[in-house]
Length: 276
Image (cartoon, rainbow, N blue to C red; front, side, top):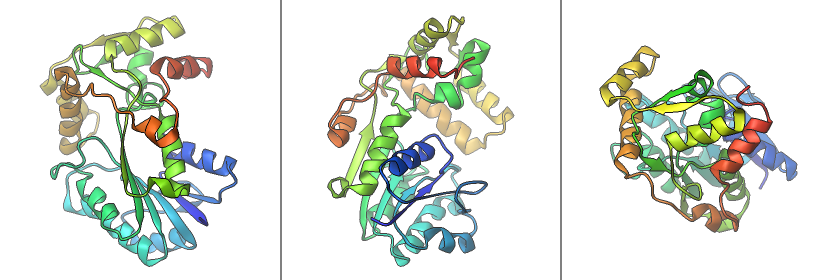
């Protein structure tokens, strides 16, 4: 493979993928709307050509999950342009349930599968790193994680594992045509996750359940669109119902090793000062 394009190159998965590829001596071009090696705006097709020039493999991310026709058409249009310009391998960061027609990433998956080139789809569970560099960090630092999950459990997956699978899929033929459901090795509750982080940091941290309607209102007040607030709440409530606790062996199937545990993530994140 020649140049490898990584969308969302400064994000939780993108920067980890780029680091792995560069360490392996692979030529990488990271792109995002505001930073990266080359600017790229999914809303501006004139920015696509320079980003795709000389690229043969691409990692695709749709950062905007609003349910609008324009948003859902961005990845399919980009896929068409990428294939036209010579890209021969696509790896899409998707999500659980994206096989359902009403999911905002469904059209992106369909576009990748129907692209006529090699493809792989990654459907990771909730990232462990959401506790250290994502939406739940403020709750951890504030001592209260308020989410509508009850005592439900889910197998958080480490972003390092997602990046490892993506980097392998971008550079190895054996992943072609694969859909990987990526999870951690065991399902834990948000209360247990908060407790593990509390033990590692010496902080007092607790999980507090909240009614779904109240959580939606909080998300809207924080600036989320109604579609995103609804989708986020539905998935979190599903954790509380017990329907999101299923484990997958796809990390091991893709990498030949077990997934990293949440405890490993906590130990590393605490040692690096993520919660100081």
